[in-house]
Length: 291
Picture 1 (cartoon, rainbow, N blue to C red):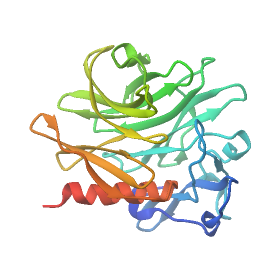
Picture 2 (cartoon, helix red, strand yellow):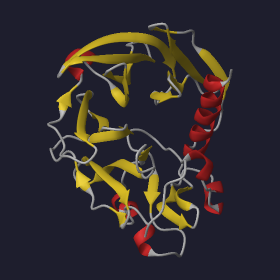
Picture 3 (cartoon, rainbow, N blue to C red):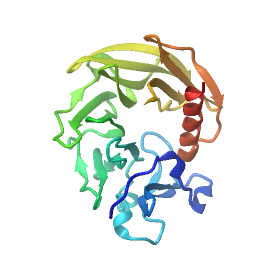
């Protein structure tokens, strides 16, 4: 099974079952879709649910080659939502998610290869509940971050694209506490964004800049109200920006220019589903890249 990987966002496909309403979770399929033009990612019908684990049921939806499915038993376990990064060298996907082992969640990783999905690797194996991983891949390195429930500690692990995983690094030595982190390399270092309770019913948006192994400088970008902010850092075309759920009616973003973060810009948003999250982030991406 060979071919190149097309961009994720234009290839999103929504199954008819994505229209399901009410409190019940929605079935979701994460799979590859090879064609003469390349290999596309298929993510069907994901809807985010109550904290801390989104109510996503991984399981085959289409009747196709079983080898195309990633994590087909995830529905039975109640695994967390996937996060995908596109390898800039191979143009194939790397995926991380929170695997439910019965007593807690561990961070799982797989990537597409010329022969299909790689064997799932576990980046954590302790007794803590490790949640909401995010992944970034550049020309040389794979970066994965996650947080521990209860302690609210944020962790980072890296590896060379074709090497072995390094020892996990506690970001929260400087960040203190944080939840739902994301990561990007920038300016010769690594940035990690997370959210934290502000003690007044809202959330702080935190950004930690890696100074050395286990040493970070942290700044507070701002605050927002409501539930999980799901802050995500992005890079592209020489630009760096961050976006998040600002309220029940607005998404927000800020660009990094001239060594500082710019003014917060908000855009309307009301649909709390995985597909709509990806769509609003694509919209913000277009705004950032606009001349």
